[in-house]
Image: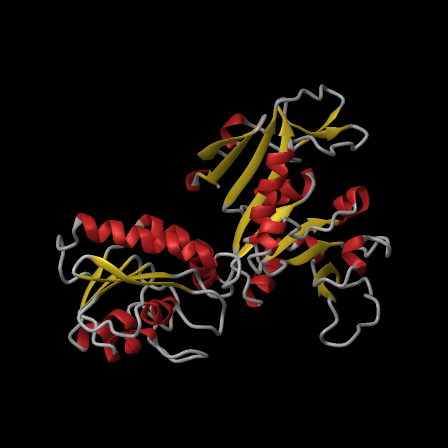
Length: 372
């Protein structure tokens, strides 16, 4: 799509990477929209910066134009994602850039939304604006959840787990509290904050009574929207006194259609129920429902059975695993329930990142597509 191959300079790449980094400022508040960052320069100097904060509010390009004082005629615009080409709750950004007479736009990646998908670039080019599309991997990664939802209707699924050095999730008694240290637990708050939904099973609810919400003060100060909690409870056996069922925060309970749910409250009741013919076993339908709600990223925080189900069904994209320097011995619970008859059939993963967190190690894992 780039009409000027080889025309992108080193400084262009630096400004574009800075725009991608700037986009992260809206990571925890802009869903269901993608993160977008924008930097505007004139004669090599930055005159405006902006990022997309929330759906329905100004897009990154508009924020950057305002930051530049409105005068961006002849300027170069670096934007992590292709400017939108249609008017929704906000004007089309491609038209806004045309109206402000910018001379050039450098784009990190094309918008995967079928309503855009190159149309923004075409609008700019037809108006005489030079456009360079770089197709940066970092730009694509920054909108991975949005892109997957646009392409498949399913959100990006991130598994979360913690285990000892010998691969144990907990002692046989079920005790696992504080298996990892303070820094690792604080890190989990970040992954919750950037997720649109957190999914767990009824076993975890009964055993641990988690809240599965964001509690870190620094994240709450950023205006983080609490994720939707999703409880998989096929027979509706969760005790009514559990925090998730009574704290007034949005919670969706998925159950078997043959099991009658409690009489529903008003449409805005924070506790909702979803009946499925195949119940909680139908993970794909559950994810499709969440995609329909506009969820770009889903975090799975559950026990070994739930993690194993996602792995067996090939319904995960990324895995954040905390490795604690402890040994729990043979009388313990495996991290994942998974039937692997042959070593050759074992699902393979790649380590994308390894990060020490105090005494623990966080591994970020991704799937090897030829093994799923």
